[in-house]
Length: 431
Image (cartoon, rainbow, N blue to C red):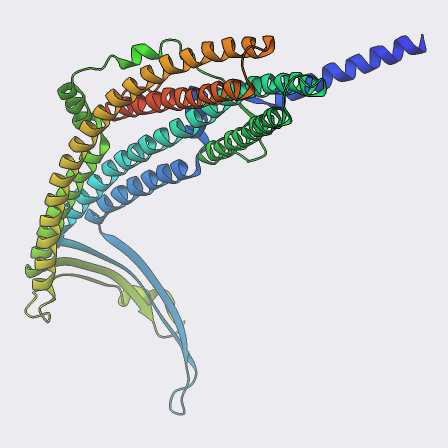
């Protein structure tokens, strides 16, 4: 009974521990990584806070149409040789309102509205950058993981070959140099496994950083189904890709907003030549002592209202300099807009050609890897039968490893470039 209880208890503990590991592990697809980043990425959260700040600045600028109101109250004690100690005080409510400022109040409201709208596109711009970075880190990680699995198989095959060679060398069937070559190949294959595992873990760390996830989090990536990767090679016409990109990419929207904001800045600089008209008003009262306090407040009640006009005459050429600077800034914004459109068009055209090239490279390395894989299997069988030399076997093994590395690298490089093109066209990124 005691033994049965111990086995039962041990089984429960193992099941609980396994369940804990399952719960603690995060199994993410690419879509899961993107959704997690949308909620947790610190820079993205900061961008959204900037949106809130821009919205608040726009709201506040509209309040400038309203008058500002303040109140003041004061009491004082005075004493001198001629006058005994006495109390005095006053209270007032003051209001002021700008009636005309060369149209700058309305321009400021419009400018802040543009900044508010532009902040949304700036967030979208960073989201595109974040998606591409996550794509790169995710595909690098699963590419290394796939390569690691193949390398582990190759390392196990090398270990079997080394064991066979060790027996053959012990019975004098092969030379010591052949045995040492097998031993060196095994050490090299094991080293490849270690290096690839480190590369995979480093790419996982890069991905966690983009997700604003703790480095110690147990993140497991779910490999996408790449069986239909050939279908990704079917591209729309380059003119269609460029047209979709020019319509959806936030970079062009941001450059257009910068031109509009610079135009308003130029108009606001010219408005400094115009007068400013303000309306002021106040209501107040006071007293000199506390004798007949109520009567004094009534007698000293006063109201004032007035209009003031401030006319700029000479300001040490500051206004003229601001006009010149704002005009130059506007011209620069217009040039930046044209350059952004040109750069974007060139970038998309280049990316399009890179996709075609990477797809061709992927198809070539796929055929090459398949050929070397089958050839390596044949050579392994021939080596086991003793019909080929160690040098022949290892040469084919290294050819296979090289072809395998090229195939996996080209496959995920093609997927990355193809999906970056989807980002440019404003499509949802899925694998």
